[in-house]
Image 1 (spheres, helix red, strand yellow):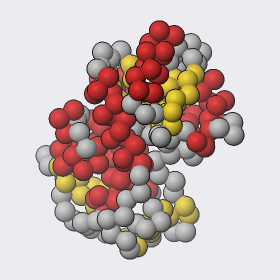
Image 2 (tube, rainbow, N blue to C red):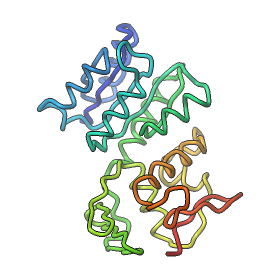
Image 3 (tube, rainbow, N blue to C red):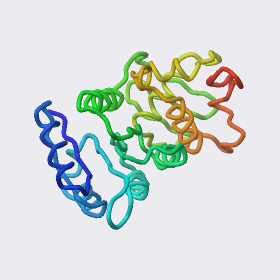
Length: 230
């Protein structure tokens, strides 16, 4: 039974979503504020949380800051932002703060549940190639799902790790954003290429010496992204 933390300040919305998620077989914890959510994640119950559904417009610290603080702890749980704010700037800001997905209200229960399932699948272990790769100091353990650079561990959230695994499995091959949406996010029909660009941006910030001049994850203008060659 997947364990979801639902962070929503509107009691009626929160209760309705909790009911829907429980009917779909999820265990649900709820929080009305970002501070309450962060305290729960830091408590002994925190490690049991497998995914967070996060509203943006919260009293106190907003959802952007909540997401940043979750990531600052090193947590890699998937974060699905669910909000009425659908401006491009909000979507980009949400993804850059570390969210794995961004869903704009109104959304039907089946679509939300599909996005949650897809995010949880991305967090599952990936063992397509049970081996280890080293690329110019970047060590990728596909069995252990760990990444180190020059011996320093690089904790990557599931979405960024999957992007890296997908690209590095075929060095030099160009992947379109649509291909990455299908293989990593598994929802091309709901996809938004900004999900890919934001995840690549966050990944570069962690693995590249100079993210503005990437060596590992390179942009192929007009087509998409490729890994190396390095």
